[in-house]
Image 1 (cartoon, rainbow, N blue to C red):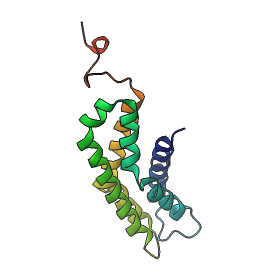
Image 2: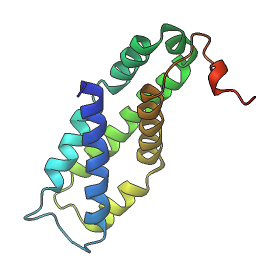
Image 3: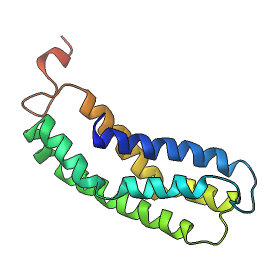
Image 4: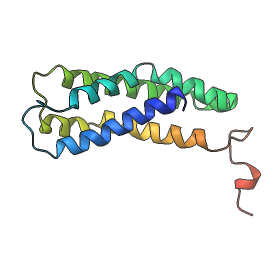
Length: 139
């Protein structure tokens, strides 16, 4: 498993855990792994844009150039999501409502969508022209 794949897994699994945590109606985080989950997610976000840039460039130098602005957005989304997570981690108690609001944050949701797209794009074969290959076109 690549470092990028590992980090995407940490972020996705963390988000799934946070969805379940939000549904618990907790007033605080005593006795839960929520802080460790959030810390792992924050750590996985550090330098994520550069890992995406390197993975895309490795898969196709043309794609790296074509997708540069999108990869810049992934980097920004990761930085904002990490800052939101840091804000939550700074609280003395982490309630389900606080996590529910973090889960609803457009920044975290945008990041997850970015990562779903990157993950799938890297799994798909690339074309040398940056568009669909002749085999992908309808007859």
